[in-house]
Length: 384
Image (cartoon, rainbow, N blue to C red; front, side, top):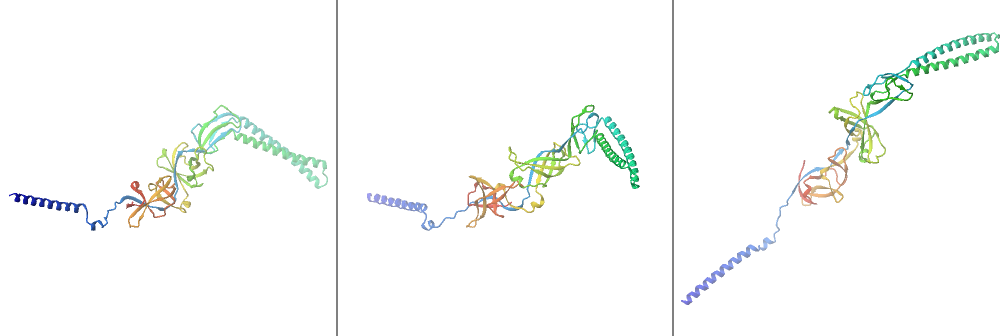
């Protein structure tokens, strides 16, 4: 009986040990991979970053700049009195439009009319004296032909004739002067424009040289704008300018660059550029707010090609400008390479930059999705 119990205990112990050995083997097999699988390299899937790309392009350097400002009178003319006298009539007021020859003032001319009449009467007397002198001189000339002329009379009548001619010439000059002074009693507009200021009124006394009226010349206006050093070198005198005035809607007007100041302003370090705008019809007025687009002449634009890169594709790190250039790597995958680049602003398109060096035409550069990129990142290109 005791032996039977001992045999049963041994049998149970053998079974438990066997189960333990089998379980341990299974655990070891699960935890430790076989040697063959350990020597086989694991293949990992490469994660590609989606980016937008655009090529570096060669384009015409069609420089264009927008300028805004207020129109100014190209010229203001001050008309002054040329003779003294009371203003007898005033024909204009501030804001009136005048043309060349428009009558603006009349100055009292009674004295000038009297002076002209006296001068003309004096000319008549001097002409009669010359006629008598000519008759006397002709008579002694006939006597000279017969050798019967008195030499003294010949000399006297010859002198009288010369004096009479000189006196008549002087009297005629006095008539011309009196007529000019009389004409100057009517004050006319020398230019086409608008009356800006009236200095003297009817009934007041005008002194010679006294300012009477200011006329704003409106057949040509100007716009003064300022350009930086990179901008001003792109333009020349005569380059075209198109503009619109806020007061006139979409109506377009043409002008040209009339003057470029040779030196930058001390306060802004910019150069003043003066644009002249013809205004024969008078549609524009001084003080109108306008938007002007300056362009280079077509002949110079057609002869200049530049490389351009989208502005979003360029960024700065540690005071150096970079872009990400996409090209195939050694493994055949498209990769983004951090590339230093030098650019300047492109005046014709603010959304692009002009390439100085760093990339060539046709190079694909990343324009969006670069925030997670690093040098040699694998990318998937999305073209525009």
